[in-house]
Amino acid sequence: MPSKDDPIFSLMDQQIDRFRGELSDLESAIGMLMIGRHYGWRVILLVHSPSTVRKYLKILGLKNLRDVLPEVGVLAHRSEAWRDIEGTDNFWKAVRGQISGARSAKTLGPHLA
Image (cartoon, rainbow, N blue to C red; front, side):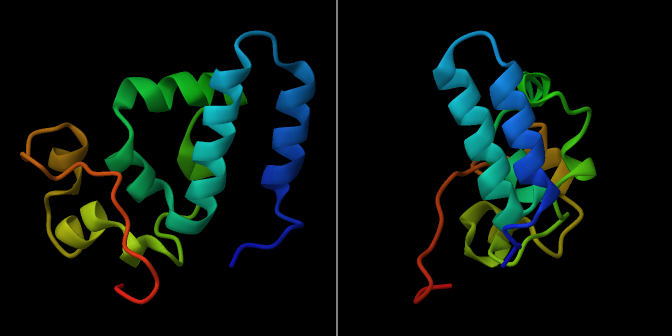
């Protein structure tokens, strides 16, 4: 599991201090980042639309999720979308929505993964 000393926490604190806008947007952006620490940026891109990811990146003051998240996190295997796409050449097609049903926010519990 990622450490509590992770630089992401400093980033979050800075952005919380600087933020002006709807708190629900900030909360969602931070939630994406926290889930991404465990699942990785590839799963995040399968869960959220590209426009939502761009919105959250802007709120967090980031250019790219790859700069702060692992490519594939320790819990990625629990993501139904990742399980469907892993090991294929279809990742970017799935991200772009070109594969029907490939994008999903569903996750399996530890006993099912």
